[in-house]
Amino acid sequence: MSDEEVAVVPAQGDDAQDATETALTTTGTEVAAPAERKVKKIIRKKRRPARPQVDPSFITSEPPPQTGTIFNIWYALFHSPSYNKWSGGDREDKYLSKTHAKGRCNVAKDTGYTRADKVVGSFFCLFFARGICPKGQDCEYLHRLPGIHDIFNPNVDCFGRDKHSDYRDDMGGVGSFMRTNRTVYVGRIHVSDDIEEVVARHFAEWGQIERTRVLNTRGVAFVTYSNEANAQFAKEAMAHQSLDH
Image (cartoon, rainbow, N blue to C red):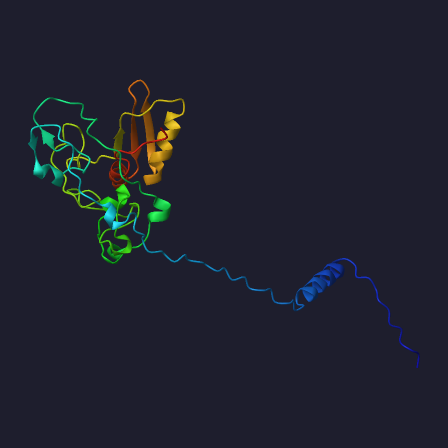
Protein backbone atom coordinates (compact mmCIF):
# COMPACT_ATOMS: atom_id res chain seq x y z
CA MET A 1 0.00 0.00 0.00
CA SER A 2 1.45 3.34 -1.01
CA ASP A 3 1.43 6.31 1.33
CA GLU A 4 -1.17 8.98 0.51
CA GLU A 5 0.29 12.34 -0.44
CA VAL A 6 -1.48 15.37 0.96
CA ALA A 7 -0.84 18.73 -0.68
CA VAL A 8 -2.32 22.22 -0.57
CA VAL A 9 -3.53 23.21 -4.01
CA PRO A 10 -4.38 26.90 -4.70
CA ALA A 11 -8.05 27.33 -5.60
CA GLN A 12 -8.83 28.53 -9.07
CA GLY A 13 -11.82 30.33 -10.59
CA ASP A 14 -15.07 29.96 -8.67
CA ASP A 15 -13.33 27.80 -6.15
CA ALA A 16 -10.97 30.66 -5.33
CA GLN A 17 -13.87 33.06 -4.75
CA ASP A 18 -15.65 30.53 -2.53
CA ALA A 19 -12.50 30.00 -0.56
CA THR A 20 -12.05 33.72 -0.08
CA GLU A 21 -15.64 34.17 1.09
CA THR A 22 -15.21 31.23 3.44
CA ALA A 23 -12.06 32.72 4.84
CA LEU A 24 -13.72 36.08 5.33
CA THR A 25 -16.71 34.46 6.96
CA THR A 26 -14.55 32.42 9.25
CA THR A 27 -12.54 35.45 10.26
CA GLY A 28 -15.71 37.44 10.96
CA THR A 29 -17.03 34.86 13.41
CA GLU A 30 -14.15 35.35 15.79
CA VAL A 31 -15.36 36.58 19.17
CA ALA A 32 -14.15 40.12 19.81
CA ALA A 33 -13.77 41.70 23.20
CA PRO A 34 -16.96 43.56 24.19
CA ALA A 35 -16.65 47.32 23.81
CA GLU A 36 -17.04 49.42 26.92
CA ARG A 37 -20.45 51.06 27.16
CA LYS A 38 -20.23 54.83 27.42
CA VAL A 39 -22.55 56.32 29.98
CA LYS A 40 -23.30 60.03 29.60
CA LYS A 41 -23.83 61.72 32.90
CA ILE A 42 -26.24 64.65 32.99
CA ILE A 43 -25.30 67.05 35.73
CA ARG A 44 -28.15 69.28 36.82
CA LYS A 45 -27.27 72.33 38.81
CA LYS A 46 -29.28 72.77 41.93
CA ARG A 47 -31.17 76.04 41.89
CA ARG A 48 -30.06 78.40 44.57
CA PRO A 49 -32.40 80.48 46.70
CA ALA A 50 -32.85 84.11 45.79
CA ARG A 51 -30.74 86.43 47.88
CA PRO A 52 -31.98 89.68 49.43
CA GLN A 53 -30.81 92.50 47.20
CA VAL A 54 -30.77 95.13 49.94
CA ASP A 55 -31.06 95.30 53.70
CA PRO A 56 -34.64 95.89 54.92
CA SER A 57 -33.53 99.09 56.64
CA PHE A 58 -32.50 100.41 53.24
CA ILE A 59 -36.14 100.76 52.20
CA THR A 60 -37.28 104.09 53.55
CA SER A 61 -40.08 106.41 52.56
CA GLU A 62 -38.67 109.89 52.22
CA PRO A 63 -40.97 112.79 51.38
CA PRO A 64 -40.08 114.45 48.08
CA PRO A 65 -38.85 118.04 48.07
CA GLN A 66 -41.64 120.58 47.86
CA THR A 67 -41.83 121.88 44.31
CA GLY A 68 -45.46 123.02 44.30
CA THR A 69 -48.37 124.07 46.46
CA ILE A 70 -50.51 120.88 46.45
CA PHE A 71 -49.33 117.42 47.55
CA ASN A 72 -51.24 114.49 46.00
CA ILE A 73 -51.11 111.57 48.44
CA TRP A 74 -52.75 109.17 45.96
CA TYR A 75 -50.11 109.81 43.32
CA ALA A 76 -47.70 107.53 45.19
CA LEU A 77 -49.92 104.52 44.60
CA PHE A 78 -49.48 104.58 40.83
CA HIS A 79 -45.96 105.89 40.25
CA SER A 80 -42.43 105.15 41.34
CA PRO A 81 -41.07 106.83 44.48
CA SER A 82 -38.85 109.11 42.38
CA TYR A 83 -41.85 110.74 40.74
CA ASN A 84 -42.78 114.25 41.88
CA LYS A 85 -46.06 114.30 43.81
CA TRP A 86 -46.36 118.08 44.09
CA SER A 87 -48.48 120.17 41.76
CA GLY A 88 -49.36 123.80 41.39
CA GLY A 89 -47.06 126.77 41.66
CA ASP A 90 -44.41 127.70 39.13
CA ARG A 91 -43.62 125.25 36.35
CA GLU A 92 -40.25 123.57 36.70
CA ASP A 93 -38.08 121.16 34.75
CA LYS A 94 -39.62 117.74 35.36
CA TYR A 95 -36.22 116.05 35.12
CA LEU A 96 -34.80 118.04 38.03
CA SER A 97 -37.24 116.41 40.45
CA LYS A 98 -36.17 112.87 39.52
CA THR A 99 -33.46 111.04 41.40
CA HIS A 100 -31.11 108.24 40.38
CA ALA A 101 -32.30 104.70 41.03
CA LYS A 102 -31.31 103.35 44.46
CA GLY A 103 -30.33 99.94 43.12
CA ARG A 104 -29.85 97.84 40.03
CA CYS A 105 -30.74 94.20 39.46
CA ASN A 106 -27.80 91.85 38.90
CA VAL A 107 -29.38 88.93 37.07
CA ALA A 108 -26.40 86.60 37.48
CA LYS A 109 -26.23 87.04 41.26
CA ASP A 110 -29.81 87.91 42.26
CA THR A 111 -31.74 85.23 40.35
CA GLY A 112 -33.02 82.35 42.48
CA TYR A 113 -36.10 80.50 43.63
CA THR A 114 -38.73 82.07 45.89
CA ARG A 115 -42.08 81.03 47.32
CA ALA A 116 -43.66 82.08 44.04
CA ASP A 117 -41.99 79.20 42.16
CA LYS A 118 -44.40 76.80 43.86
CA VAL A 119 -47.45 78.72 42.62
CA VAL A 120 -48.43 78.42 38.96
CA GLY A 121 -49.05 81.77 37.28
CA SER A 122 -47.06 83.85 39.75
CA PHE A 123 -46.02 87.33 38.72
CA PHE A 124 -42.54 88.83 38.74
CA CYS A 125 -41.22 90.96 41.57
CA LEU A 126 -41.22 94.66 40.72
CA PHE A 127 -38.67 95.43 43.41
CA PHE A 128 -36.43 92.61 42.17
CA ALA A 129 -36.42 94.25 38.74
CA ARG A 130 -35.41 97.53 40.37
CA GLY A 131 -32.72 95.78 42.43
CA ILE A 132 -34.15 96.65 45.84
CA CYS A 133 -36.08 93.58 47.05
CA PRO A 134 -35.16 92.80 50.70
CA LYS A 135 -37.11 89.52 50.98
CA GLY A 136 -34.99 87.14 48.91
CA GLN A 137 -36.28 83.55 48.92
CA ASP A 138 -39.24 84.57 51.12
CA CYS A 139 -40.65 86.83 48.42
CA GLU A 140 -44.11 86.02 47.06
CA TYR A 141 -43.05 86.98 43.53
CA LEU A 142 -40.61 85.53 41.00
CA HIS A 143 -36.96 86.53 41.12
CA ARG A 144 -35.85 85.78 37.59
CA LEU A 145 -36.20 87.06 34.03
CA PRO A 146 -39.40 86.39 32.07
CA GLY A 147 -39.27 83.60 29.48
CA ILE A 148 -41.25 82.66 26.41
CA HIS A 149 -43.41 80.32 28.49
CA ASP A 150 -44.49 83.07 30.89
CA ILE A 151 -47.85 84.12 29.47
CA PHE A 152 -50.14 86.51 31.31
CA ASN A 153 -53.57 88.02 30.86
CA PRO A 154 -53.43 90.93 28.36
CA ASN A 155 -55.06 93.15 31.00
CA VAL A 156 -52.01 93.02 33.29
CA ASP A 157 -48.25 93.30 32.90
CA CYS A 158 -45.67 90.76 34.06
CA PHE A 159 -45.72 92.33 37.54
CA GLY A 160 -49.48 91.87 37.89
CA ARG A 161 -50.34 95.56 37.54
CA ASP A 162 -53.53 96.48 35.70
CA LYS A 163 -53.14 98.01 32.26
CA HIS A 164 -55.30 100.84 30.96
CA SER A 165 -57.24 101.45 27.78
CA ASP A 166 -54.87 104.17 26.64
CA TYR A 167 -51.30 105.30 27.19
CA ARG A 168 -50.36 108.18 29.43
CA ASP A 169 -49.37 111.46 27.84
CA ASP A 170 -45.71 110.82 28.69
CA MET A 171 -45.97 107.17 27.54
CA GLY A 172 -45.03 106.05 31.05
CA GLY A 173 -46.94 103.88 33.47
CA VAL A 174 -48.07 100.30 33.01
CA GLY A 175 -49.27 100.65 29.43
CA SER A 176 -52.36 99.81 27.41
CA PHE A 177 -54.17 96.51 26.95
CA MET A 178 -55.32 97.57 23.49
CA ARG A 179 -52.06 96.54 21.82
CA THR A 180 -48.90 94.51 22.37
CA ASN A 181 -45.89 96.73 22.93
CA ARG A 182 -42.40 95.18 22.86
CA THR A 183 -40.43 98.42 22.41
CA VAL A 184 -38.78 100.42 25.18
CA TYR A 185 -38.09 104.13 24.72
CA VAL A 186 -34.76 105.36 26.10
CA GLY A 187 -34.36 109.11 26.46
CA ARG A 188 -31.71 111.62 27.50
CA ILE A 189 -28.76 109.40 26.55
CA HIS A 190 -25.24 110.72 26.15
CA VAL A 191 -24.39 110.41 22.46
CA SER A 192 -20.97 108.92 21.69
CA ASP A 193 -19.32 107.00 18.88
CA ASP A 194 -20.19 103.65 20.46
CA ILE A 195 -23.62 104.58 21.81
CA GLU A 196 -25.39 101.83 19.84
CA GLU A 197 -23.13 99.18 21.38
CA VAL A 198 -23.60 100.71 24.83
CA VAL A 199 -27.40 100.70 24.60
CA ALA A 200 -27.50 97.14 23.23
CA ARG A 201 -25.17 95.86 25.96
CA HIS A 202 -27.12 97.38 28.84
CA PHE A 203 -30.55 96.31 27.59
CA ALA A 204 -29.54 92.82 26.41
CA GLU A 205 -29.25 91.88 30.07
CA TRP A 206 -33.04 91.79 30.37
CA GLY A 207 -33.94 89.52 27.47
CA GLN A 208 -33.51 88.75 23.79
CA ILE A 209 -33.41 91.91 21.68
CA GLU A 210 -34.94 91.95 18.24
CA ARG A 211 -33.76 95.38 17.15
CA THR A 212 -32.00 98.46 18.52
CA ARG A 213 -32.37 101.88 16.94
CA VAL A 214 -30.52 104.98 18.11
CA LEU A 215 -31.31 108.53 16.96
CA ASN A 216 -28.02 110.31 17.56
CA THR A 217 -29.35 113.75 16.68
CA ARG A 218 -32.07 113.51 19.34
CA GLY A 219 -30.24 111.53 21.99
CA VAL A 220 -32.89 108.81 22.18
CA ALA A 221 -33.06 105.09 21.43
CA PHE A 222 -35.70 102.43 20.82
CA VAL A 223 -35.07 98.86 21.98
CA THR A 224 -37.44 96.17 20.69
CA TYR A 225 -37.56 92.83 22.52
CA SER A 226 -38.77 89.49 21.20
CA ASN A 227 -41.08 89.09 24.19
CA GLU A 228 -43.39 91.75 25.63
CA ALA A 229 -42.77 90.62 29.21
CA ASN A 230 -39.04 91.25 28.79
CA ALA A 231 -39.77 94.76 27.54
CA GLN A 232 -41.90 95.41 30.61
CA PHE A 233 -39.17 94.06 32.86
CA ALA A 234 -36.46 96.11 31.15
CA LYS A 235 -38.51 99.29 31.44
CA GLU A 236 -38.60 98.98 35.23
CA ALA A 237 -35.05 97.64 35.57
CA MET A 238 -33.54 100.55 33.62
CA ALA A 239 -35.76 103.34 34.97
CA HIS A 240 -33.58 106.21 36.26
CA GLN A 241 -30.41 104.21 35.57
CA SER A 242 -27.19 105.37 33.96
CA LEU A 243 -25.49 103.71 31.02
CA ASP A 244 -21.71 104.09 30.81
CA HIS A 245 -21.81 107.82 31.52
